[in-house]
Image 1: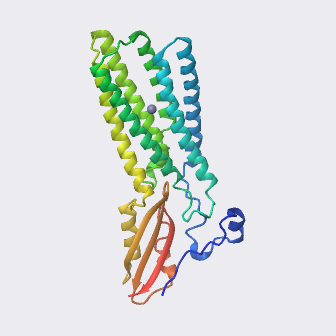
Image 2: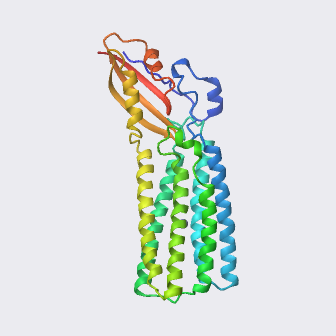
Image 3: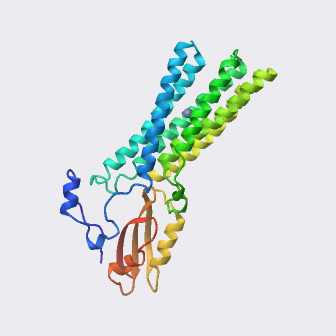
Length: 321
Ligand SMILES: [Zn+2]
């Protein structure tokens, strides 16, 4: 006996009209709709666009300043800022796309994962940044260049100030702490981690420059650059792992899976197969196959999972034990 909980969608091209013609069915009460966007989607999208704007304005100022003062350092930090504009536009664009595609029936499980794809791409950019900083630092270590400390230090401090404002704007919403989204919004995390890493690198750079200016330690700047590169690489690795796991449907929460198993296994019911995966920030799906000597209607099993935080889509199959 097989009781499938999900009706088969039949129209792919007309999401809105289709949703109106097929209102949610009782068996699919968990589904409501296929909008698996994070609870803070609108807030995070708005802030990501604002930070992208801040970076774009800073970029324009740095490039103009570089031309005006013939400063290579300003032009170089302008190029780094251009990378930030790209990273933040990717993150913000993913929020926009996820929202736009939220009701699109071509996506079997909604478009809540668009943000993970952007997060993964931005994590790869972060890894490339780490390698670039490391190579540059090694080169500087063996072939020291004359540093114009007088202009480099204020420049680094100005960059740090802008970065700190961006880090503050991109902080995760406080409410996210108490919710069932263990990993939070990884799209926001990727942008936030990149800028946090930059803030730390800026601090190290300023320390290195001050050591060079005060004590003539020209090796301090590249050495601290190497340390910063190691840190950025660590951030990138962790992000690639987390976003990759979400994209590849690795079980996101053993706690949630155990809770589902525990609730379903009331009385003589046995869970013979259980799949749990991520649909979007704070949203999970589950397929459970239960076996019972005297099978009850599928609603009985679904009711046991009613109100389970973080479970947004459920399919139950009932078999005779
Ligand atoms: Zn950066």
